[in-house]
Length: 96
Image 1 (spheres, one colour):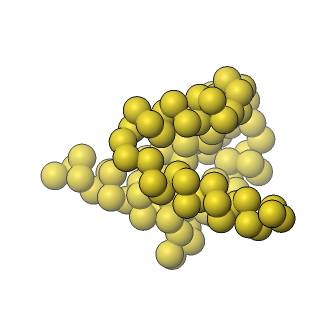
Image 2: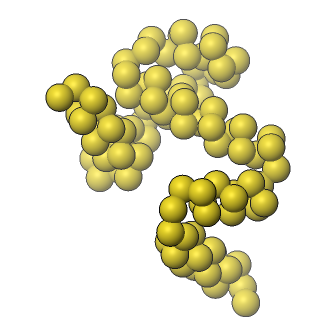
């Protein structure tokens, strides 16, 4: 198999996982603690940007550049972006 085929296979495998425990176990075995921490930090930054936390505060809190924070903001500006849709749904539900 080439990388594209492995990527497709991985995505198919992930979509067949039935619950959060299976998904958590899968990623715990697949990724290192450092890689999981990086993903969690990215998710936290997306949440902070979505909640309109000032970019300077985000950069300081996560010890990253303003340019990097800006990149997260650009992802959330994508009209049909998946992460934007997920966070919009999350925050729209909590405001009800």
